[in-house]
Length: 372
Ligand SMILES: *Cc1c(COP(=O)(O)O)cnc(C)c1O
Image (cartoon, rainbow, N blue to C red):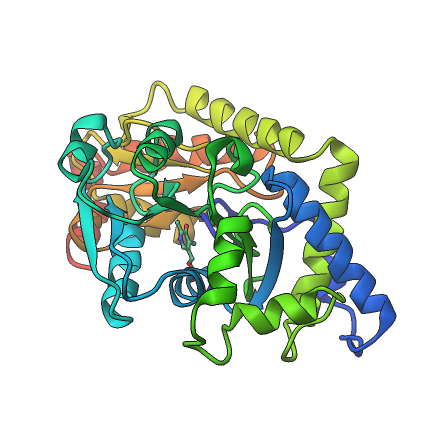
């Protein structure tokens, strides 16, 4: 299978080799070195401010989102959640479950956030902004300069779920004045799932220090204390952490975060170029380099296209859920993909779209799509 999903993504050969190795004992100097070097590289690639720290949690990206809310926020906060899709609404639910008062900036699917969307909340006493920099469910890369200005103006903390955008799009935590950033192992890091990384700036660290402990497993105080000597409070996903370390080092050798972002952008642009003649519209105001959300303009079901690509062409793309199920599917550009892979997907898409139009030959596949 050729993997154009948005996570887990196509892994590099060196990552697969590590995946096949035995899991070493980890309470050792050697493993501590691995972790300390990984922390240093993550801070560098995130453009983290002086004094920032990174913690590695065993859990998928959502564990990182919940951990930030539990450790950095408190009931006295008023959070503002940018909600343009399922990841925005995940932040909202996390706030709700943990009793954090919150408002939301609700955006229709595929739409960029604008000044007018924020205006109702200007000067209204919100203390923290929670945003998924790339709302992966709809493929919108938010205007971080706009959000950063809004936070500065209102004296708010800025918490960025950068899970599907870290190493795929530019990100400079210090320049944005972001206080926390979350990344996940199975997106542009292109490793096995199971680890999330949270970078905390000085203001977030001070809050962690001051806040009462609200979680045992996801407690940052413990993770930071042990992390200072390259260790974790509990048994981590050792294999995935070794993959992350190797991948970070390879990116460093290739030129750092900027080179990885450029590589991903080139793949995204190449793909968008190749599908120009096909009945597909990019369904986002502002797509990320990480993925292209596509809407079939010939009436075919987006979910049906996902199934056809998987079952007949050996290619994974990502379907959407809920009301977008038949309207949008997403093509990822993260991980070990090439322009030759893009050519293969474009050819498969041309075949699927031709075979699935409104004409007679299309009848069979459309019917199957309509009633899965
Ligand atoms: C993938 C992703 C997550 C995390 O999802 P998990 O399944 O928990 O790894 C969170 N936010 C965004 C924007 C994502 O793309």
